[in-house]
Image (tube, rainbow over all chains, first blue to last red; front, side, top):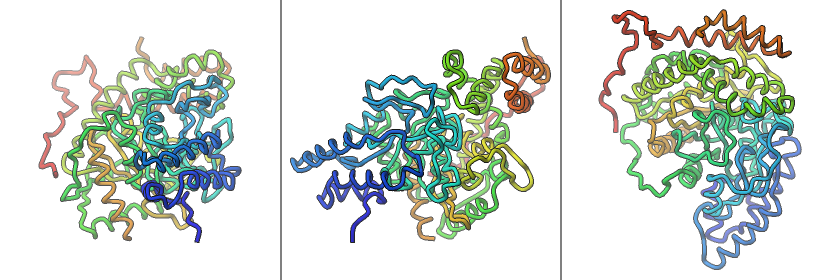
Length: 450
Length: 67
């Protein structure tokens, strides 16, 4: 029986590469074959680096033959969101308004992954300049959900999620300004990590809102997310003393966060909590004070900062943006300075509120995305008779933690009756992303036994 | 110059019309709603609030944090 390597998690294929069970060239070719078979309909890549990847694969095989195995990313094909610089190709941001110049150096994260032996197989489609939650507004056309082509895979890291979910890459690097790693991970049944703010360098990444921007991995399991996080983060050589907690206590902030959920998402989430309780976890209700103000705080921050980072683009080439993104950028020009200051104050208040909620538990637990993957072309979602803009609904459960900088990870937690993935989100204490990963790995193992 | 959200909205909508971006007007309405919420938050104190107005409680002290 032929082993479909391209559907395996990184840690499994790494072992196979190290022991010679499979060559790097075979692994890279299996991913390229999957791309050829599937990406003409999914549109997850903006650019393939096939020949370069094959050359690097052959070199990686020669290194292994010479006894120079570089570790668990040696020869592993990864995809990179086309907002992040990869030397030798342009960074398009999926926009006709972007600079067409070729990147001369890798972004810091890409350089670290390459140094660990990873092979960059291509760059991924996204919502234009990462300013959207569906992946629909892209000069390359919308990315399609691998389980239902009529649906969005979520965004903005839409192509990253689809490339991993469809076996076209073993992991992908995305960016998350309001949920853009976690939302598509939840919609596509993946693990998506947004670390503590500042832990992974944004050098070489086109900014959207610099005080909210994070870089993070999208993977098939928590162990793979940890591997990529450890490779990319600053001071990655630091020795961690974090251990899996003996008592696993989760706090579920029901007010605000669980008030507006699709019924199937709610059922899936509550089922996951029941299973965790049955397995010995403690899940108790908690409150994040002022959480109902988080959309207003986030909106003023992201609009102001995005208008600032795109001021030159709006002045010189506003007609090259897609209409929806251009309007949101224009909107940011109208935010008053004093309201941006109020939002900054609100961010501090909310940060303390999340800290307080975390004082009596190991992590907060809530759904990642309030709805299953939406149909392409949807503008408004009706939840329990309350119509709401799709963008607001998709950001509702993730955006707060971009404002506060707390680490957050999305894990798969079941399927809807239509077979669409649901996501569960864990939020940890700032600067304790390792601790969150330990907890997430234990949670993943518990939920896998359902 | 401080403007109320209503005054701001009128000015902003007129500016959107002047600049030929009428599609911006519904978004400005939504932003004005968010600005009202932001300004109405209990933690947004004014320099003119009376000294007894202590609407923002200090964060509670940590309780028995699990290890």
